[in-house]
Image 1 (tube, each protein chain N blue to C red):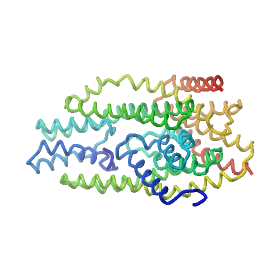
Image 2 (image 1 turned 90 degrees about the vertical axis):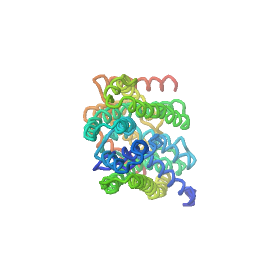
Image 3 (image 1 turned 135 degrees about the vertical axis):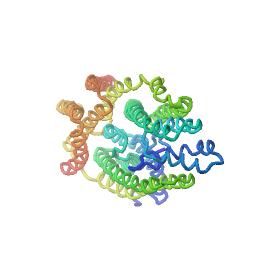
Image 4 (image 1 turned 90 degrees about the horizontal axis):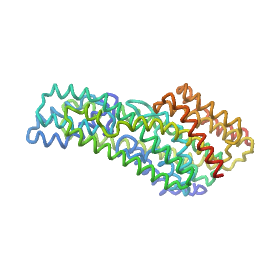
Length: 230
Length: 229
């Protein structure tokens, strides 16, 4: 813990922020502080590197493009996952490829663990609210508030469980030696995963016949911009 | 609105809870009719959470004008599909990714995480608050005419443009994020070809694309550790 420079106070702040981010996703207020680009930036900033946090968040955002919260769909929970991933990378003090890859992978896995807890919460909500047959208004208000409290506690517990282990893991990986060829292969694998997710995202967001062309044009325009600006 | 979302009644708990202040005013001094109205609105219901505001006020208006409970229930059932489909397409598949992708492009070009994050939150929430406000007031004024109000909504053409812009922005964001990734292999031709092929596979076979992307994501750090020593 001391090597990571994470105090109990900072851990508690992460837990409270994680609870707020988890609450934002569906319960309240849905202003999208729970999106990975925001959550991971906050996580990174709390551990001293907002920029690394944003990069983790951007990759998680692209990976999640194909997962829409339609109806009863199950999708990765992005708030606590992004927060922990961003904090994990920033805590390592190393913005190299190895820690970045691990932080992103941890964020993705935590997102799906979060999704499982959301499913459980929705079943509990069924008992709380759907069982109200003769509905005295005060009972409805109380149970609705109770469901939201459980949601915040759930997200806080998720953050509490994963924050320190992820920071330790990413820190350990940052100390391992990695060679040039390995870096190229691993970064190529990550980029292929992001490109796959981008293709899925374009299709899910309502791909028309021209969508692949537009996708390619966007990529080409960005590549040209990089070449021109260096 | 979705605070008590569940698999049995979906968003009905949130809808009934949001209607309570209006129902209390409409049925002031009549607890029996108030409880009957609350029970009515606890029946299964689903819609996009932002456009639920339209259901809240449209249904409250019907309650206030003493429309029969049967008619209210039928109207409530009819509201589900349009309020869900329009909101999902406009917000979840259109506006939210558009704002996030723009923020990612901004970060890649400008470099400040805070400028990009605040840009995302401000831009997204201008649309978010506008939509909730529009839905709330338009629902009350429309009553039974919610369908027509949705057809005449000022943002109707936006969905098509957002789809077009998002496809372009995803392409740009993938390349720019790759550029920002340390030790990037982007400048090798075989990698560029692999990216184009991967995007094509993701587009043509989204289910397969998702599974392969998740596998590669987990495999990347493992590969680095195995080959790195």
